[in-house]
Length: 143
Image (tube, rainbow, N blue to C red; front, side, top):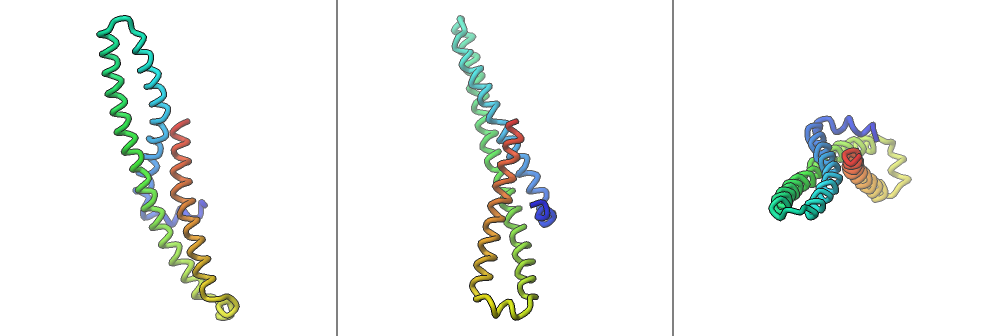
């Protein structure tokens, strides 16, 4: 997996933005739990004006946290774009390698086998690259 990262070098800014969005998305989940606890504790206030003001404050905090989570969800887009560009470069390299093989390789295998295997492998790499990186960064943000 780490040998694939140099292929993403031209999109390093997009991938960094995607990592940042995933970190923020991971950190917003515990923040929501803390905010929910504070909101529930506001309902145990004796004074109705204090309870109303705290409830209004925490509802605005929930609104702000919702906006943050919306933009954190958009953090998957840069990772997907960076992964697609990396897959394009990797496909070109593998196709070039296949074209430089000896002719006997192409005689032994049916024509669709190589292209189907190339397509399947690239799909697996694309899903593993973008999704795994996003999930790991979210876990780091949660911890």
